[in-house]
Image (tube, rainbow, N blue to C red):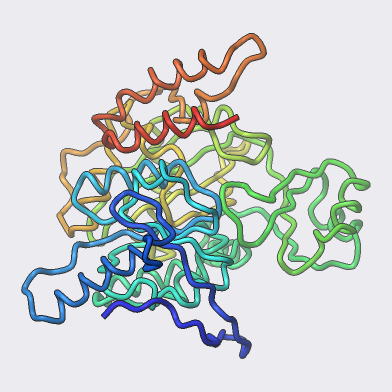
Amino acid sequence: MFTEPSLGPVPLGDGGFIRPVRPVTSDKASVRVASRCGTDRGSMLESRRARTLQRGTRREPCPAVLFVDEDGWDCHFQLASGLRRAGFRTIRVTMKPPSRVAALCFNRTVQLGSDSDLASLESILDGENVVDVQAIESLALRTYQGFPATSRPETSANWARRIDIVDKLVVSRRLQTGGFFTPDVVPAPVAGAREVVEALGLPVVHKPRVASGGQGASIIDTLGELQRVMSTGGNSDAYLFERHVDGRSLQFSGVIGGGHGGPVVTYETLRREGRTGPAYEVLSIDDPELAETGRKIAAHLGIEGMINVDVIRDAQGRDWVHDVNPRVWGSFASFRVVGVDFLGAYVDWLRGVPEATSRRGIQEETRIDVLPGAFLRQEPSESRVQVQARLARAVLPYLKWVGPRYVAYELVHNLKQK
């Protein structure tokens, strides 16, 4: 029978304890804290499903994909909408109070008080048939520790391998042992800024060892700026310093399945938020060498499912790998513009369907605007109505690609933004 997470102390791996906060849950595309009788509606539905299973029904629980975020990721909403359309349950665990419109894309939403409450995840998801997890890196470790196993050993093993590459310092060292080019790194803390400059030069990249989407990363140009960063909390063991590499910002992304190659793409980042943030315009390119490097990295790290790899190609043509993400990436749905269906490939991978040999990658260069970021940039001369009209035109193809739930969510969500 489904139960709410215990309100007693929950042990952590370091010997301490946390006291979980009762999560706010929702189901059936609605966000409700509780019914008028004070009973959690999500818990009632989960208890009903668990009791049905206990009575010996032959019906197998619907396969579900778990999404874990701090503040909402656009690609999570796109993927979740498409998965619901394909017959999967989608469950969102978030640290942010969920909005009603966000529930269009998820069957169930659970709000936690803090990331430490992920220790109760196995209890929260009791009765769910979770077949994969899409978690941002900053929450991935606690997510996989809180929900460590499934009924399928191969799935649990894949999750365990993902844990191993959450830490960027660990990934860098593992890739170096595998013969891949990776920028030199100096883990914090260090004695002083001059030590970093002597080892890595300037400019230098400063970033958290565990983070997502470029969050917390910065490119530091001067010694004075480096000293300020280090004196304001940036010299703890949660950070590292990385040699800055000049060159083209390229990416490899794909759906990698065991024993067969899924669709992959290679592309260049043309525009992004700031100097290290997510891309909102990319150029698709046909680069077999980079594609082969990406596949080798996935094999070396033992990653299956969705994967995204960031590299910098220097003047000598060497690809320096500086980030590996075993999850969905921001532009995955936008590649339908050039005929690459990552949603369909991911659904097939989840179902264990052999990859269709007819699926091919990009054959020619194409500029791709990434939804929604590329369409929300408001020029000084534009009104909110004009921005909304541009977004509406851009999102229409997604009715076919990922379904009406995401389209409705994106349009309503943007209207509510100030």
